[in-house]
Length: 138
Image (cartoon, rainbow, N blue to C red; front, side, top):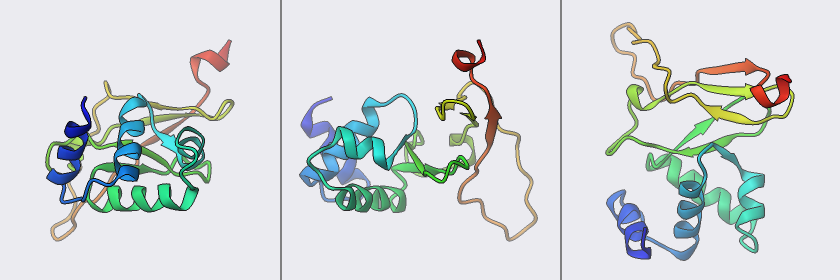
């Protein structure tokens, strides 16, 4: 993708494409799995933690990313694959390895269709499976 492509993604979501926002977006796109703030802080140095966090908050508000709670006390962030907004079908389960701490996207597993009572609106779904991953199980 070109610099202009990243700018257009942000503009399409109503976000002014600043240098920091473009850097965070590029890094999130580069990763094939959810990442935490500490990982981003390392790869985006010398950008400071506060700046990265503010970009992540904005991206979450504008529905560019999903924020994942895996129970490790460290939020993880991944790009939203829905074109226009978060949807229940855009959500997928994740697997958290209790041994190495890695988090895996399980895109091939569909979430069940949730039938919520009337007047309830889904904003996000957190479907977390915990156990031991294949690389730690041997």
